[in-house]
Image 1 (tube, helix red, strand yellow):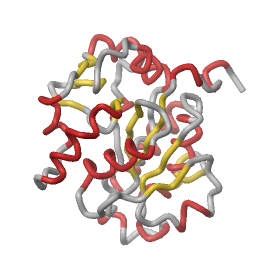
Image 2 (tube, one colour; image 1 turned 90 degrees about the vertical axis):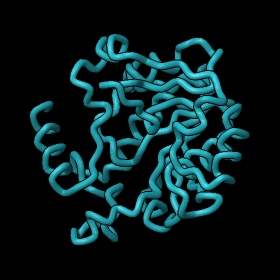
Image 3 (cartoon, one colour; image 1 turned 45 degrees about the horizontal axis):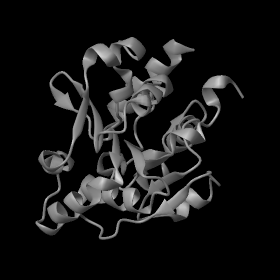
Length: 215
C-alpha cells in the first residue's frame, strides 16, 4: 500500500457515499437492476472502486442505500445505512449518513463519481475546523455531493427536511461555510474530473474512454 492509500485516522472523518438514486436512465441496461453503482469500471463495480479510493481517508465508510442486498454480495469495508425516510432526495441521504457517522464530520460524495481525487479530498480535510461545511465551487456552482459536513449541520438539515426541503444548499445560510475555489482545486485537479458523474449511458461511455486514456 502506497503512502497515498494509507488511512489517516487523525483526520477523524467519516465518509458517506450516497447510493440512493433511482438510476432510472440505466434500467434498460444489464447492470444489476439498472443501478449505476454497479456499472463496471476498470473491471470492477463503480462503487467498489470508489470505496477503495476513499478507504485511504477514513476507517468509517458508510453507503447510504435503501436496497442493501446487492452491496452485501461485494463484501465492501463499509456500513450500509438506509435513509431515515425514503423519497426525500440527496438531502435526506446526506442527513442519514451524517447522523450515522462515527466522527464529528463526514465527507459526502455520490456513488457515480469515478474520478475522485484523493489529494484534493485530503486538502479539503486539512482545512481549519472552524466551518460546518467545506464545499468546492466550480464555474460558479456548488458541489454539495463532494463536500464535508459537520454534525453541527444536523439541526439545520432536520428543520429543512421537516419543511419539505430537498436541496442540500438550502440550509447553508444557517451554518458556517468554507468555499473551496477553483484556484485551490486546480492545484490538484486542473481538469475538474473529480466532479464528473455518470447520469446516462452516454456519460458511462465517456467515462470509460477517459479512463482508458489515463492508463
